[in-house]
Amino acid sequence: MNIGIIGGGAIATYIMEMVEKQTNEGMQVCSVLVRKKEKYAKLATHHRVDLYTDVDAFLASDVDIVVEAANVHVVQDLLPTILRQKSAIIISVGAFVDATFLTAMKQLAKDHEQHLYLPSGAIGGLDLIQHAAATDSLTSVALETRKPAHTLVETPIHSEQIVFQGTAATAIKQFPKNINVSIALGLAGIGMEQTEVTIIADPKVERNFHTIVAKGAFGQATIHVENTPMPRNANTSYLAAVSVVGTLKKTRSHFHLG
Image (cartoon, rainbow, N blue to C red; front, side, top):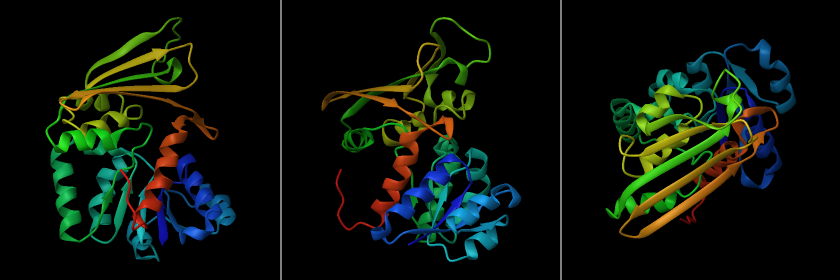
């Protein structure tokens, strides 16, 4: 399977490194779409990939599936074009807070017989939440996210501070780079307008902490995840990058668990 990646940052680099190590999986990264070739020339040489700045040329290359590792705006701008030709794995799931856009992308994937994959990102337990929601066994989902203060507030603080309380739909608009996990939860469960979110800036922590509480007829589940940041980019969750590689492997498997 030939993989094309949009973006050349920490997650894209991690994907390339992991795919190169797993030679028995039949996967390789061959094409990378970036804004400026000059900036990523060394990356391309080191990983032996072709760089593109034009999306049409990128899609016309020998790519079987596209991985977006950029941002919400890139998803909004390019995904309609991508799904007409290729299946895609989307990291910046915050783009799907727009219900009209989400519906259109689902229909586009169906019309062109493509697949749209959304990795679990920096959290876990989405399988449980999806199963409960599918059987109307889910009544509430709440997320508490605690992050190092400097990633959420500009002014130094000395004690923890709640910087947001509200719905997932509102959270992603106020913190578009920090709370994609809330959109994943909303999509898996009872919706973004019904998923409760609390975001805490904490000067005493160095990791990201996500605690999910889901309740329903099935009982109650509490899922707690502590995320180590990526060495190359402290603002990026290591688990988010891991989930992309795991999703790539699942697309090739004939055995599905969960």
